Image 1 (cartoon, rainbow, N blue to C red):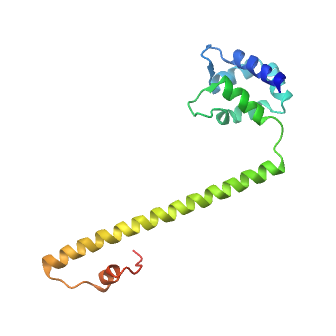
Image 2: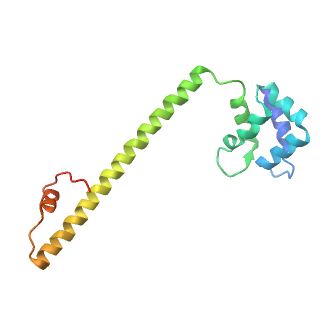
Length: 152
């Protein structure tokens, strides 16, 4: 791990053409194109193809600021080395399922909140209309007033 860390930090310095302390995807692409064998050798030693390194660059940008710090680069590449195991894939599938369930729960909550708000606004408008025009509530309005579910 220490050897890979050192190699990745050295590669980072080479990639950081403008010496900003961060690298952009463009800088990484430029170095790989200019020295594809040197960059490929470092990535290959960790079982990461050059194509995969370019494709996964967005994953390395953990703070989503369109640039990659040395820590993001090193830690990200170390995490990406090797191949995914069936356990890794299964864990990702499980986490994805949990997140989908959470999103579905939020969606149901927002839909119910919207329906409730809409129901209140309709009743308020109908009551105002009833008082102004001395009109009887319709069966629809009466159902809403009693709290029955009415599809709109």
